Image 1 (cartoon, rainbow, N blue to C red):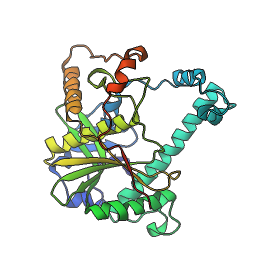
Image 2 (cartoon, helix red, strand yellow):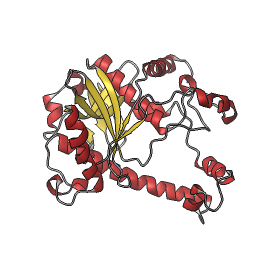
Image 3 (spheres, helix red, strand yellow):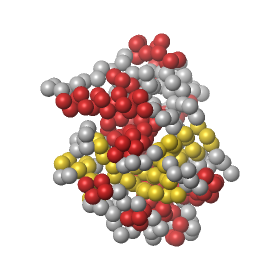
Image 4 (cartoon, rainbow, N blue to C red):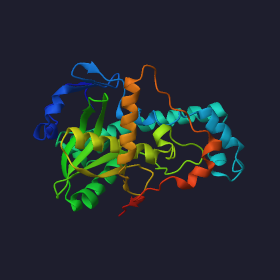
Length: 312
């Protein structure tokens, strides 16, 4: 969100005015602390953080150690050539620098798209009036508009929609909600990511998600599925489509990644959250060790729709 604290729709947020929901008045978001407040009570976790709580912490030292011990760590190997000459600390510094740069560019891209759908003046990546000297990402977004969104007849309904579940104190912000021609809705998420990974041979999820690989495809799928259930249970919408729109300058065009509908997993996550809130002591999920998942890798469900790439 562009403002430091959201206390309702701003003048330029046309979709939030036209398609206002009664629950909108109950939620605010503080950009500085990245915290949501509902009815005056600050929530301790967002949908993104909620999903990540079911997966192990990223251990950069362990990942680098395994990478350097792998048979592919030799001249000609992809990882070796990419990080040749760097110490483990140097690799971590490179990752941190790349992450900060990508995060900033991703934030600007989100804001530009939000302004576009709300018919608001814009700058940043899009260029003057969205046409003069556009960025590569913006060019891909406009291709997406013409070749995907308009052809499917999707009508922009809400952007950066703040939503919440007050039963388990969970809140989040949905990038994009479209109204579909058949009266149902679709949730789309903008990603400035180079790659969507659908497997991780070394680590699984925790607790009720132990059957899922710890990778960004499943993280994003679960995040959007939590939003889907929020909208269906508390906002009265029928949502039957979830997708990522990949807009990265290193790709040849935009990419659409369809996501699974995961009702059973979200139900288990919400139940665990409720149990955690009511428990006298915190409920801690145990990490599945690498040696325990070798025989489970082939049992992990594959994406139903995979990655659908749309180019010129």
